[in-house]
Length: 213
Image (tube, rainbow, N blue to C red; front, side):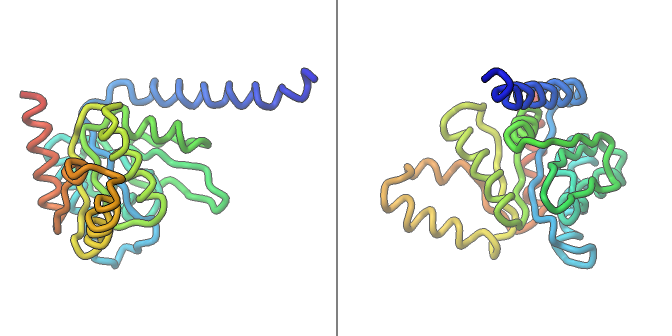
């Protein structure tokens, strides 16, 4: 009976080791912004170029950038921050299809467990920015919204970039979710919807300035 329980016990220790390693590696990180976005955009895509510009804008103001550490828009944002000698952090995840850390990281951490990785995304963040993305981006976006809505974290700006991309989601929240009284009207104010990365960066930078007073 004891032997059958051992794999679960070792799993707990592995989770603990990921938490300890992540906390230790990022212990000096303050006031970062976490940026989410799809791994599928290539370098020639306009979205990639915009994400790189976002990283440049944030790092230029001394704001550390955290991404999922992979390719696509994550790479682009890290690349922009890295070019400005800003703090560029990647929190990678082990997947059935291999996700290799991108080449533009000052700190690269690798996780097996999504919930540990999510904890690290939130722990050092003073803002979240969601670029166009798929299920992973949506998961991370709604995780952040839920934490703010339930007051498990202090309120911080959550910014969706790309009105054309995100407008349908906002319309669904307004016309279906709110109409069915599954959220309150105030919950629609938990995020910003903007069209450009310049607007997103401005919101984050202004918040960090006010926070640092």
